[in-house]
Length: 231
Length: 272
Image (cartoon, rainbow over the protein chains, first blue to last red):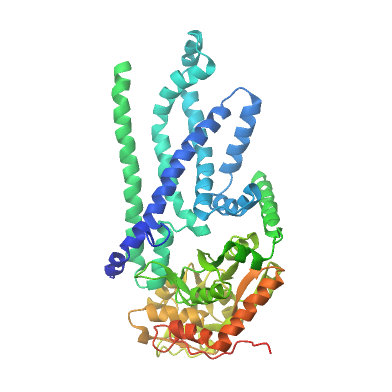
């Protein structure tokens, strides 16, 4: 076994060439994951609410968006987006930004469907009662429906976010130096320790994903305290 | 059906991107920007790889690009590319030039232009020492490892129809299969085989044998129809060769004292 290769390159797996060069490795993976989660949540929420709207002008674009994205492999979205960006924006986007946008767009379609399921699962009476008290549709949504629905959605969200975290590894195809890419670079240079290197990488991925699920459990317990009081 | 239609739309859009004409001349672009953006390999020793000590991308092709940047009075900026992204990145303008172990092939001329050959290698076999395989002829009935989608895969099949080609995702995997006896030889460009052989714990246990199965001339990729820039690159390469700068860089990465010793057996095409 050649665990010394892993030890000697561990700093490269964690931060890449930083501070003497661009940031990479695990740090880049975490940036992509956190940025992706944040972006996909808000975009997905927006698209999801459009999807359940009664207005066709809102519902149809959302439906088209969801269907197109869900019918395309993520690898292709990442790859195509990088080469389509210059047409859309008029100049080339840096690789990491391009990958991040692709991840956000891709995941938001799934988040939108989770939002739709969560809102539709609430009894209809909730909305009717809220409107009955004189709240507008928007107020009823933000104050009555979403707080309840979002809580129920947490497990599905976490599922999607863990999936997103692992999907960041696909950014390597356009040359983003994240964890998988860093591992490939070291492996192709040394050639002698593929098993050790990729075990290390798998453990690192597990650690970030586990942190994410633990955080969601903590969040659920916390919100549950308030919920229990109300019921 | 719907998915197929969607894919068609995406494919059309992609063609549109690929067909976008190069705007201004690269030479002016680089001079006004002050940087030369080069697409290089980041995991192909010794052409372009991440140095263990400094964590920076170094290698033969990087030094060559540095020499070119110096001639342009520009700073060098490196962008890692892969075999699947190097041509689209060039046509789209994300990089000015590609130095990424790219074989100059006729079919690639449709999309990009090439400089003169800056590195000449050919496809050979990596085998166990004293394993009885001396040339392609000995491969009859044997299993040969290569990499998916590479030209090496097709070339060896053409040269020896009686062998079974097993394709792997990367060369390290093919080499692992050779070590475990799952294949009797690994075939690809000699320059890559040297790197694989010498990364092993016991390089002396392996041998690179045979005549060239196919020639593999590497060319620098430049944007299609930008003859000013291509002329400059060609002139720079010839100048490096004539002044001995090329040989110095070559010796640094492939010389006798290096791990990847590969004698310089070819001559660059020099225009009078």
